[in-house]
Image (cartoon, rainbow, N blue to C red; front, side):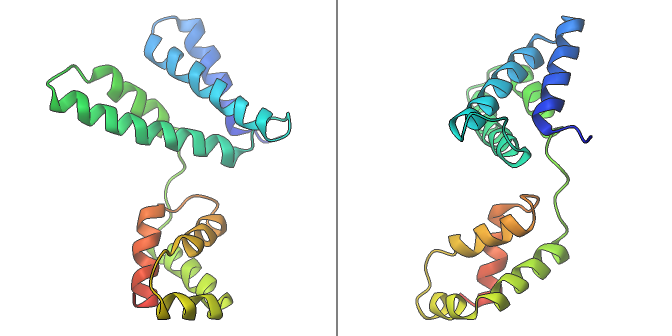
Length: 156
Protein backbone atom coordinates (compact mmCIF):
# COMPACT_ATOMS: atom_id res chain seq x y z
CA UNK A 1 0.00 0.00 0.00
CA UNK A 2 1.26 3.46 -0.90
CA UNK A 3 1.93 5.86 1.95
CA UNK A 4 -0.27 8.94 1.91
CA UNK A 5 1.17 12.39 2.38
CA UNK A 6 -0.39 12.76 5.84
CA UNK A 7 1.14 9.38 6.78
CA UNK A 8 4.53 10.64 5.62
CA UNK A 9 4.17 13.83 7.67
CA UNK A 10 3.17 11.77 10.72
CA UNK A 11 6.10 9.37 10.27
CA UNK A 12 8.53 12.26 9.91
CA UNK A 13 7.07 13.95 12.98
CA UNK A 14 7.58 10.75 14.99
CA UNK A 15 11.19 10.49 13.76
CA UNK A 16 11.93 14.07 14.78
CA UNK A 17 10.29 13.47 18.17
CA UNK A 18 12.57 10.47 18.74
CA UNK A 19 15.63 12.57 17.97
CA UNK A 20 14.38 15.44 20.19
CA UNK A 21 16.86 17.82 18.60
CA UNK A 22 14.95 19.66 15.87
CA UNK A 23 12.26 21.50 17.80
CA UNK A 24 11.53 23.74 14.82
CA UNK A 25 10.61 20.72 12.67
CA UNK A 26 8.69 19.07 15.51
CA UNK A 27 6.54 22.16 16.14
CA UNK A 28 6.01 22.76 12.42
CA UNK A 29 5.03 19.17 11.59
CA UNK A 30 2.78 18.95 14.63
CA UNK A 31 0.91 22.06 13.48
CA UNK A 32 0.87 20.94 9.85
CA UNK A 33 -0.48 17.53 10.80
CA UNK A 34 -3.22 19.09 12.93
CA UNK A 35 -4.29 21.50 10.19
CA UNK A 36 -4.35 18.73 7.58
CA UNK A 37 -6.36 16.38 9.79
CA UNK A 38 -8.83 19.20 10.48
CA UNK A 39 -9.39 19.63 6.72
CA UNK A 40 -10.26 15.94 6.39
CA UNK A 41 -12.46 15.98 9.47
CA UNK A 42 -14.33 19.05 8.23
CA UNK A 43 -14.84 17.40 4.85
CA UNK A 44 -16.63 14.37 6.24
CA UNK A 45 -14.78 13.07 9.28
CA UNK A 46 -12.15 11.29 7.20
CA UNK A 47 -8.41 11.39 6.63
CA UNK A 48 -7.28 14.23 4.37
CA UNK A 49 -6.47 13.42 0.77
CA UNK A 50 -2.97 14.03 -0.57
CA UNK A 51 -4.32 17.02 -2.49
CA UNK A 52 -5.82 18.51 0.67
CA UNK A 53 -2.63 17.96 2.64
CA UNK A 54 -0.56 19.45 -0.19
CA UNK A 55 -2.84 22.50 -0.24
CA UNK A 56 -2.19 23.01 3.49
CA UNK A 57 1.56 22.63 2.91
CA UNK A 58 1.49 25.19 0.10
CA UNK A 59 -0.44 27.60 2.34
CA UNK A 60 2.21 27.15 5.03
CA UNK A 61 4.95 27.79 2.46
CA UNK A 62 3.27 30.96 1.21
CA UNK A 63 2.86 32.28 4.74
CA UNK A 64 6.39 31.21 5.65
CA UNK A 65 7.87 33.03 2.67
CA UNK A 66 6.07 36.22 3.70
CA UNK A 67 7.28 35.84 7.29
CA UNK A 68 10.82 35.23 6.07
CA UNK A 69 10.72 38.38 3.96
CA UNK A 70 9.38 40.39 6.90
CA UNK A 71 12.04 39.05 9.27
CA UNK A 72 14.80 39.82 6.77
CA UNK A 73 13.43 43.32 6.14
CA UNK A 74 13.64 44.10 9.85
CA UNK A 75 17.05 42.50 10.26
CA UNK A 76 15.78 39.65 12.44
CA UNK A 77 17.16 36.11 12.65
CA UNK A 78 15.69 34.00 9.84
CA UNK A 79 17.26 30.62 10.66
CA UNK A 80 14.11 29.02 12.11
CA UNK A 81 11.93 30.27 9.26
CA UNK A 82 14.41 29.01 6.68
CA UNK A 83 14.44 25.62 8.41
CA UNK A 84 10.64 25.46 8.35
CA UNK A 85 10.55 26.28 4.64
CA UNK A 86 13.17 23.62 3.91
CA UNK A 87 11.10 21.00 5.73
CA UNK A 88 7.89 22.05 3.98
CA UNK A 89 9.43 22.11 0.52
CA UNK A 90 10.51 18.51 1.04
CA UNK A 91 6.85 17.49 0.75
CA UNK A 92 6.09 19.38 -2.45
CA UNK A 93 6.44 17.25 -5.57
CA UNK A 94 8.68 18.52 -8.33
CA UNK A 95 6.88 20.90 -10.62
CA UNK A 96 5.88 20.09 -14.14
CA UNK A 97 7.84 21.15 -17.15
CA UNK A 98 6.65 24.14 -19.14
CA UNK A 99 5.90 21.89 -22.11
CA UNK A 100 3.72 19.56 -20.01
CA UNK A 101 1.77 22.48 -18.56
CA UNK A 102 1.36 24.00 -22.02
CA UNK A 103 0.05 20.68 -23.37
CA UNK A 104 -2.52 20.44 -20.57
CA UNK A 105 -3.55 24.09 -20.99
CA UNK A 106 -4.11 23.59 -24.72
CA UNK A 107 -6.18 20.47 -24.00
CA UNK A 108 -8.36 22.37 -21.51
CA UNK A 109 -8.83 25.25 -23.97
CA UNK A 110 -9.66 22.83 -26.82
CA UNK A 111 -12.18 20.99 -24.63
CA UNK A 112 -13.92 24.25 -23.71
CA UNK A 113 -13.99 26.39 -26.87
CA UNK A 114 -17.10 28.33 -25.88
CA UNK A 115 -15.61 29.37 -22.51
CA UNK A 116 -12.36 30.29 -24.25
CA UNK A 117 -14.24 32.51 -26.72
CA UNK A 118 -16.19 34.17 -23.92
CA UNK A 119 -12.95 34.93 -22.11
CA UNK A 120 -11.30 36.29 -25.28
CA UNK A 121 -14.32 38.51 -25.98
CA UNK A 122 -14.48 39.75 -22.42
CA UNK A 123 -11.03 39.36 -20.82
CA UNK A 124 -11.23 38.94 -17.12
CA UNK A 125 -10.60 36.24 -14.64
CA UNK A 126 -8.94 33.14 -16.07
CA UNK A 127 -9.47 31.42 -12.73
CA UNK A 128 -11.76 28.72 -14.09
CA UNK A 129 -9.17 27.70 -16.68
CA UNK A 130 -6.37 27.83 -14.10
CA UNK A 131 -8.44 25.55 -11.88
CA UNK A 132 -8.98 23.06 -14.68
CA UNK A 133 -5.27 22.97 -15.55
CA UNK A 134 -4.32 22.59 -11.89
CA UNK A 135 -6.80 19.75 -11.53
CA UNK A 136 -5.49 18.01 -14.66
CA UNK A 137 -1.90 18.41 -13.45
CA UNK A 138 -2.71 16.95 -10.05
CA UNK A 139 -1.63 20.22 -8.46
CA UNK A 140 1.92 19.87 -9.75
CA UNK A 141 1.87 23.03 -11.86
CA UNK A 142 2.53 26.48 -10.46
CA UNK A 143 -0.82 28.30 -10.47
CA UNK A 144 0.68 31.73 -11.12
CA UNK A 145 2.67 30.42 -14.10
CA UNK A 146 -0.43 28.62 -15.38
CA UNK A 147 -2.39 31.88 -15.33
CA UNK A 148 0.28 33.69 -17.34
CA UNK A 149 0.57 30.81 -19.79
CA UNK A 150 -3.22 30.70 -20.31
CA UNK A 151 -3.36 34.45 -20.92
CA UNK A 152 -0.68 34.10 -23.57
CA UNK A 153 -2.42 31.12 -25.18
CA UNK A 154 -5.79 32.86 -25.21
CA UNK A 155 -4.29 36.11 -26.43
CA UNK A 156 -5.61 38.22 -23.57
